[in-house]
Amino acid sequence: MHLEAQNTACKGHMSTREMVDTLICGAVAMAAPLPLYQLEAEDTFKEIPVAVHFYDDTLDAYAVFENLDPVFMPLGFGLYVDTVTFHSTEGHDWSQGYADTTSMPPFHYSVTTGIAELGYVPNHMNVYVMPYLAHDVGGFSYIPPYQLGAGRHPSDGVWVRSDLFSTSTLTHEIGHFLGLYHTFQGVSYCGEDSELHDALGHLYGDLVRDTPPIKPTGNCTYPNCPPSWPAFRPWYGYVHNNFMDYMHDTCRTAFTPGQVARMHSYMAVYRSEEYNELGLYAGDINGDGIVGTLDLLFVLSCLNPTMIENCEPADLDYNDVVSVFDLLVVLSNYGL
Image (tube, rainbow, N blue to C red; front, side, top):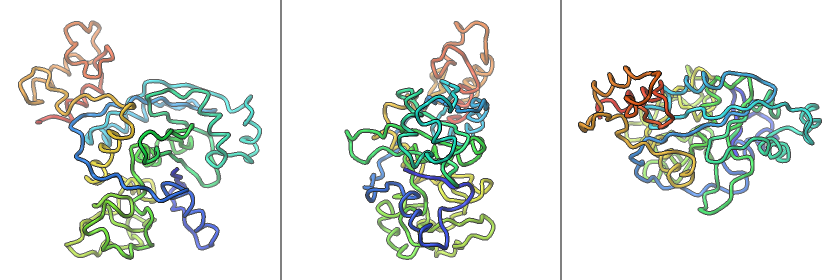
């Protein structure tokens, strides 16, 4: 389980707060994570249907996920909203505890399980948007166990607070869903013992070699751990802008190549039922072996057509309409 505190690291000066950091900011509370060895990234574009569940809110899920396209589409992930449901937090066996904040997700699994049972959609990334979560928690996400055949948590999915739904907190939690840990997972404050990453970076920290093993920076302009590593370090030149760090919302803007490879590998091994493969060269509509100008023009001419018959080749996600999503697939693979 991963928990995201709003624009802050789960850290503090009190020992009790440090204990919370250890227990709930880590990837798996009950045991250290087993490494998922870096497989070759799957040569496929992964289309992930999303089911969004709003509680006491009526936000625009479609607009929010369209804004995520520039982040995830170039990495080979197409997140499209397939289902949106609206619920009330009242009238359930967990309602009173939620209302008076004595039973708050994610600390009370009976609450999260009860919420999930109301609308969980199989083979989707389920996103639960709540007015509030436990104190200082902006979002959290479950990562399936690192044992093939092990069951999922009944509340598997992405959880985010309503006021952070359109911020990098959502991107951060989706990163967890796709298999990423925090960049500072299981390491000392400024990366003591960081030499372990030089040869075996995929076995330590967040299990990704090109992310520096440091604690949360907290400030993107003046990070607590300045990037003063020598050139032989695998994270030499790293910029403090990673989505999986704990920083201010505006600081988090990128994933590393190693994280992208891990996300594809992780999804292929542990979440294969939650995406559709469109192929690396999705968008080669005319079959000439390259995604080029002719393919782009064809999609543009078919955007939102009244008749789909002549435009079926441009319907790359097979949903019976040519939309911006199909255009983005072509743009993402343009020139391949």
